[in-house]
Image 1 (tube, helix red, strand yellow):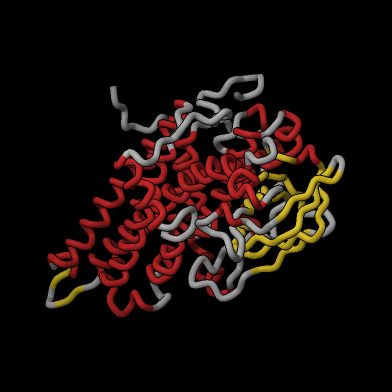
Image 2 (spheres, rainbow, N blue to C red; image 1 turned 60 degrees about the vertical axis):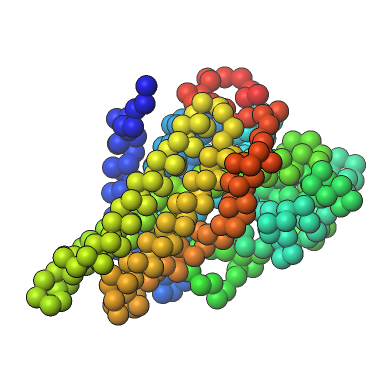
Length: 403
């Protein structure tokens, strides 16, 4: 039996988040974007509402809602701006959910709980200046030294780099082993040798914080190793399943924002004596946005449903991310076309939507990477195995470790 309806709890969450976006983000976003300003007050208010740990079990300080509730939050936040969806994607999807899946009970108590409660902020450090899609080429090194590891290297394009309290850093203990040498570590900002600096001149997401994390002889306790030595690549890929899920959900919200802005303008603007919404080529663009929105949301919710079942969903999440991101970028381009010359200025939000939408088809696996993945699945060249530690199914257990 299929049920496409949201639960009462999810509907209330959607209503609450939508109201938050309308009052706390949208009225200020044009100014924040122009000033390249990331407003931490928004994140703090999200934490007060329990939205920074919406799908983390109550045992670990979260709201205990299902994974599609996270998708609902991400869709609504990106409707306001990509910057604040990104904050939740990185903090909750890439960092906190990875700790939930792979962390020890001690690590969950020390790091996951304050993150789920929103008193601490988490970030994710995989990408390097010379290693993006080719994660096996990481140059960041980790050397065992007694009860610690010494980390050296740098990470780039790290969201929340200047604000995060905890970084999930991936480094290699043995470069000759490529993927099998990668290991994951929880690194605190206040560890000696950790510095960050922002990236300037981005095309879009001007209201977000992105930067570089530099690690110089950073001593990390062995107790902060996440998983076993050499398990880092597997951990990173499982984290990306969650990150891609949130990006796809956010892209769905961006498409909806483009659709709503275009419909509004199509009613307001008149040419040749009628609303431009009466012109068939404008209708065609709006129809594509509507279809794309519905398709994207279905793909996202299917991935979330699989997560709720405790089933691996790499294939489905990859497809959702690819399609939803492509749809958002095309919708943003069409929204500017609907607005004509006005769409080319920041008098209307659609030019910001397009600048932001370009990032969606690049990060969390480029559009091209996901195209290859889907072809390999279809051809039978790629098959996902059950991991030795899976994301816990929902509803969550009340106690005990998740295996």
